[in-house]
Length: 402
Image 1 (cartoon, helix red, strand yellow):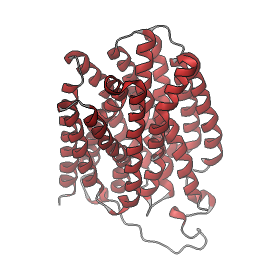
Image 2 (image 1 turned 45 degrees about the vertical axis):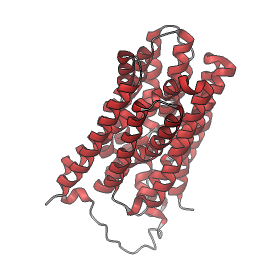
Image 3 (image 1 turned 135 degrees about the vertical axis):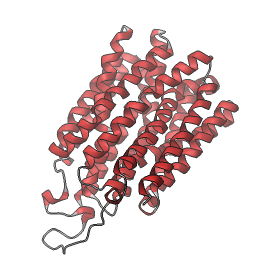
């Protein structure tokens, strides 16, 4: 078996744990901490924002670190950091103590999320670059399906202190041996293989490599239009995900809100399954724009008609888009810039994406507290998502225009 597919499988598991305890876990931390301590939602949302800010600041270092030393040391450190941060949230007694916990989660998230996974998978594939990344990041959807119910169950039965300690220890027990064993190699040439599992180096005939789009386009415009568009889109996406439980709880109750978040994760999983089948044969910028339009419509419908049927339907539509937007960012950069130094190239874009999207949870929280509800914030999020679509489409057209 081509070792690249083992790398994809390992990254699938890593993504499952990372998204369960990172992006989707944040909505549980917001609800559980505010309920346990009675602290304002906006204050806890700012602490969650810190984890995205920290992640943004080290994204480029993660990409460069994987390019230089390989994924194993970087992802092992990330796993230890995230596990400690999650366990620490349950031990806090004052609001300031949340901040070091979310700093640790931010460091772990930087290593275990999109940049770390994409930089780990990219050297192993050429023809199946889109499919391999999609399948690897598909674990994010499994994390969305399982993460919130598992966290709510652990906190509900064991309390926030013991429950999060058990979850953190379990994450470390799953990921540390997996990373140490499977991610020993950086690229297929180290074990005498070629990308995509083609003929071995000894048997292979010379091949012609098609230059990436960036070789014949305006590189800065190509990179920064993608970075800006996905930064805005993901800021609204992360803000929605973080507040999803709190948004749904008044209409569905805590258990119902948890089920809806899981169903949204299931919708994202379906989205990624479909994406894995089509991504290597479509114009990825155009596909991302279409998905952003659908997400904007879902947010606007929630703002205008906050009823149970609309909440469920809009969440599922938005979730389908989550499965695309989270994955398409690195795929756009990989297709347009190639595999050489992908970690550093996407790490640069990811820093901008993470730095901007870090403000999503706090922005939605401030809008909610300012207006006394989520409806105005959701309408604004819809408009921002449409702006991201415009930047992505226009940037690609202008960069490749001769």
